[in-house]
Amino acid sequence: MAKLPATIFVCQNCGSQSRKWLGQCPDCEEWNTLVEERFRAAPQTKGAGSFSSQFSTSPIAYDTIESQDDARTSTGIDEMDRVLGGGIVAGSLVLIGGAPGIGKSTIVIQMADKLGQNGTKVLYVSGEESERQIKMRGERLGIAADNLFLLPETNLQSILAETAKMKPDLVIVDSIQTVFSEKIESAPGSVSQVREVAAQFMMFAKQTGTPVFLTGHVTKEGSIAGPKTLEHIVDTVLYFEGDRHHNHRIIRATKNRFGAANEIGVFEMTNAGLVPVSNPSELFLQERPENATGSVVTVCMEGTRPMLVEVQALVSGTTFGSGRRMTQGFDHNRASLLIAVLEKQLGFQLAGDDVFVNVAGGMEIDEPAADLGVLAAIASSFRNLQVPPETAVFGEVGLTGEIRGVLQAQARAREAQTLGFKKLILPESNKKGLEKLLGIRVVGVKNLEQAMDELF
Ligand code: TYD
Ligand code: MG
Image (cartoon, rainbow, N blue to C red):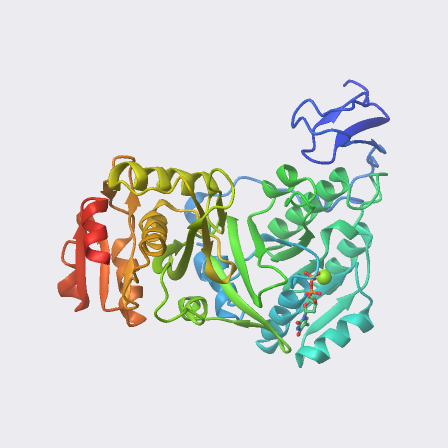
């Protein structure tokens, strides 16, 4: 076997390795991301060191394997169960990522509390806070924390030794960037450390059937340190979305081996921690202005859940030569394209106007089904005409101004009806049978012209 070099250089962005230092990573083309990391040869003694050597496996007959679905444990928090695809799967490795201070430690301790009340023994490994700090947070959250054990430790080998002794039903590691393996000499949080620690916890989870939750900070580029290397190791990746200016937090499953990806859980950060929001549409429509132009409600799908959001637009004469287009929560290029369709197909003159599009409540929408909502808001502001407040719209807009059908139209329509909307404007091809089913007015439109006639 070829001798391994004593040191290698690892890109901290993508995990690519090189024997020499380079200014630019040849894989991800980032500059100054290569860091020297040392390898220490793994000890040759069997049975010690890595967790994997304590077990051996042999082939298992397919029909003797128990189905995993009954092995799901509820976290006791509905919104959390939803993003996990119905609860915690035995032996799964879950990564919870998010910006510092967004609520990662809060959600895991709340989960530990709920699980503890049902008799689940939880080990909470903390490398960031002392046991007293964790207790302080717990008291603030008013949790009883039966069956919760704290371990302020950052050495991977010690953590695995303690886990083997204690045999908890769930392990939480807060955060993965603070844990280090003795076998690798690079600093905690570096790509090789994070990868090794995650791999060891993966092996631990798979071989003992104990679920493991890891929390991880997101770098300023928006990825968990060594993103490509971590995200494919773990079973489930949950990302915290939200910002300082809003109280709601969204946990999104960007990857889930045991459930639908893109599923979201909505929470509100309060004095008593994160409170699940079971009806997000209500939350996002709460502050909708009455009798205002440029405000339209559309229906988006977040995973399997339909959600009503308010799209706002403002069209005003520009003070510069040519109009600016600015968007928040909606793709800028898509908005420019839609404005061009409006100009070409309906003859709107928007070249001399600034157009601003905003999705209220800090939401982000990125599906074509929102096209019609965005166009309706722009048209409403431009013409100074109001869209009736009890009307909701959705549909994809094509370049020739045709309105195309969208997925899960029925679920969207039902959500609008549930929230008291009396009229729906949607693609003609999605209309079938909906009016009878829901008992509200459903208007199918084929092109922008028809849509505009219906709206104003
Ligand atoms: P935390 O869970 O410590 O964030 P992370 O682990 O992701 O870094 O959350 C800290 C923030 O949440 C902090 O700004 C205070 C706020 N917070 C509340 O508003 N209410 C609460 O009950 C708790 C525990 C925290
Ligand atoms: Mg924390």
